[in-house]
Length: 71
Image 1 (tube, one colour):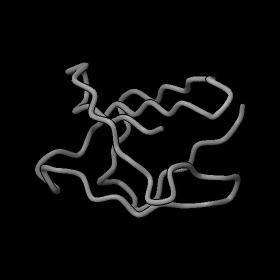
Image 2 (cartoon, rainbow, N blue to C red):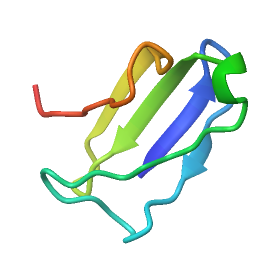
Image 3 (cartoon, rainbow, N blue to C red):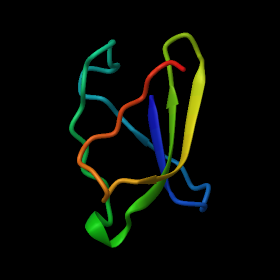
Image 4 (spheres, rainbow, N blue to C red):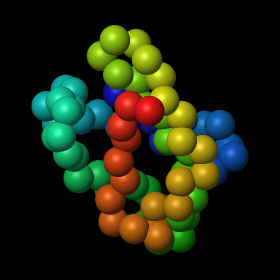
């Protein structure tokens, strides 16, 4: 599950995936409200095993793709 919040606001919105979940190497095209008026988002992804990864302050205007990977 992916959740997004405008940077620093801690107001997360769930973003559903079209297939319900993403597998390794899969991608999903998303359009976020605010367009280019809001560039910095805090991202939170919850993997199927319950592991949560947080990416605060992601500048989504700086690129067209954002990748999550195990670290």
